[in-house]
Image (cartoon, rainbow, N blue to C red; front, top):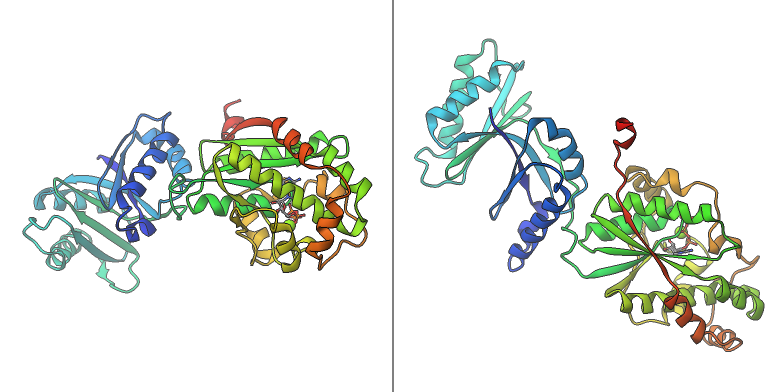
Length: 394
Ligand code: ATP
Ligand code: MG
């Protein structure tokens, strides 16, 4: 019996004018993710179909579960669109199944097929009742839901539904630059922005020797987790040591974090211009720390006109943690190595900074050339997804 994976687009179907662009992007993303498998992929306006070898199914499903733009998918049995063939396959399929109640749901997309959906429900329901003993129809809570899709040429019978990753296909928006620290929040922000279709580059500010190589490795590991949702991620590592030392040497301690973040935003904007990004993305969450009050955010944000996306800005910490656990970044994030924000934390960071004061603090040292240097000396690592089953192969 031949099976295919039948993919439903979900949210995509609301995109009228852009529909083809969305579908084509999803098609490319799926083809890219499944490049190592011997599969054939077909698409039409409402579905995508993947023909596969049975021995690859588990591995293919693992990949599909991380592709945004897939709302739901089914492993469906394929049959010619012909009433007798459909009946024959249905009998064959239910033969091995144990159930006491069922329901048939037919969707007839091929309007030239002579039997209407409602009538077809009865016809196929009758076939099932005749073939199995001690079973009955339950339209509200059936033990077995038999779905039949009648399409031109081919029809599909399936019993299962797998939840997809949802969202929009990556690549349906321009690139965004994610500020990726070793914390809990920023990987979640990266995941959520990719889910909106934004391809991301990651940027990590490091301050060696004040921060360790372990802290850098943590960020690389986090990037690998994010790369699962795309093919590869460019991680740009900014040498932030000199700027950070200058800030702490020259500025009032209470303003150090504010100034440090203004410098980060400036560098982010420059990196976005260099790598064709149209937005800065970070893991700021309103009220979480002194630099994330609305007053702080407005003073920090003042250095750039670029959109700053803060996907977790209105989430509770527990909600962020929940999501971090689901996407597998939490255990890495809680490893103890400190990053450049944590090593320089002053005793009393200002909660309501004034823009005027921030600008005065910045006049105390010559930073523009340091920003240029930081951008020019960026170290870029290409990070690819880590194969989950790697250790199984050893
Ligand atoms: P936590 O999860 O513990 O809050 P965090 O990474 O969110 O950690 P914050 O100090 O709250 O740390 O920083 C807010 C945001 O600023 C981060 O989510 C991240 O996007 C960005 N950021 C902070 N430090 C760095 C860094 N060293 N490199 C890149 N981005 C950083
Ligand atoms: Mg945070």
